[in-house]
Length: 170
Length: 170
Image (cartoon, rainbow over all chains, first blue to last red; front, side):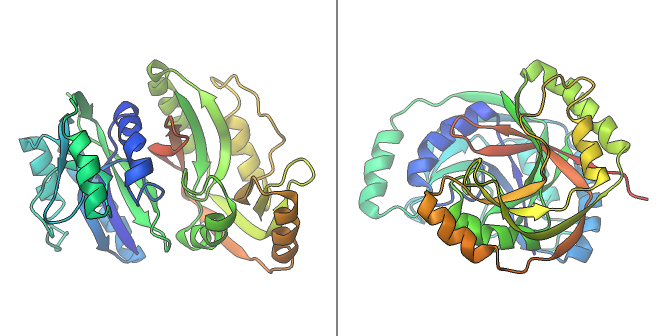
């Protein structure tokens, strides 16, 4: 089974993201707007209890995380993904590292660029048109993430939440 | 904000349900296959901590729940919804009642018919055609639900999981 770990931003941010994803993101139907902490990884159903325990321990030792969403950006020319930029910070980076160490032996495919995807699989024409408009827009959301979620992927590519993990509050 | 409470059946059942939902359920993109325990209700963000605490207490006092999925059925002629029937049982019924009592002052709109919707908003022609084929099919899934989820609804109708609640294991 394939699992993944994400943060869902606030409803406000998700509503904002979905107003674009609906039109531009081919994954719109598969998962709500999210920040990926650990991308899809294979795990046996027999391993999942151990993974859940590990995630509980990680969450219990991790403070809630500030999220600043500051602009539209893109991975062009690597690919045509357009995203909402989440400003990197030490807390986010450290949580990410914990999810790729200890019992987690897989390695990240990319350097960590925290983001919320709002467009993908766009033709070059579409990409330049849409991104040209969006990059001029002012974006400013500040909030705190107090939880993350472990999800699993269905055969059609959709994701279902398996469990919630609460970060430490002061 | 609108909240709802559901059980997600196993991946196996969700895969089976989604193979139909993809074609026949207009809510396919909004939420994974699910059994609704408490349909959409309004709650203030300020009330949600209290609701979460109540749900934790309910979950801690509720044993894991057997789920038997036995056939395709439908709500016709009330509406054209086609669903996978989940056999009613005392455990499911009691959990449902707890979610409509105590601090929850709203009343259920319908009698409780546990089900997983796989088709809706079908024309009469489509409905008779699809249901005519499906009702002949043998369906048999038996499993145990060990958790339920509190979700909230985004402006576009999509649902995001807020929190997971674990039922009591022996």
